[in-house]
Length: 236
Ligand code: SF4
Image (cartoon, rainbow, N blue to C red; front, side, top):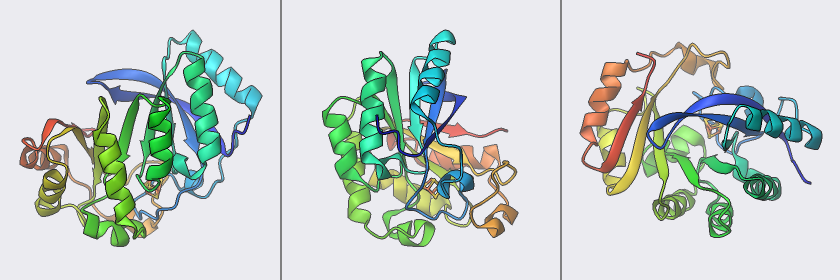
């Protein structure tokens, strides 16, 4: 089996309106350069890589802990399409549900996974308004981002999510994101956490202040009519 560059951990996610335990598999490497990214070691592909035996152990432990959901995250998982598809296929074959986290840069890979029924939930990052993508991420092909958004909106269960970084995401940009995704199911506004262990891909970003939970809830109010559900992920 082609496992590519994957590492793992166990975590809690907010999934289908409830907290659910999930095992997280990290696909290393990313094609974006978000300055506030906390996953520097994964972005650079420096984490230990999972072996087949390691994956079997991770899945056996997941079963023991009644974990039924496996999150495939990154970095950006779709950059390793064969390893991603093979892993998802094996997980589904073993009775797990698969959640995919993606930055939306590879709609062709996403489409294949969805058409083969290998993913039951997608969490797609929305880094900003489409015109902000080159500045925030260094990725310019926003047609691909739009195509991924359209694929995700065709699913039954999914979320779009934005890590709100004050320099980029004021009420204006959040409102524009709401308008762009109007009629979608779920939108999560996440707190930027400069205090997390991983630091920031661009260290100067970690010196900037983040929004408080109350400020994020104010941003959520702006887009509450654009989505079936808007949630805020903040520690306060
Ligand atoms: S935050 Fe940006 S740079 Fe970091 S892994 Fe996600 S998409 Fe890649």
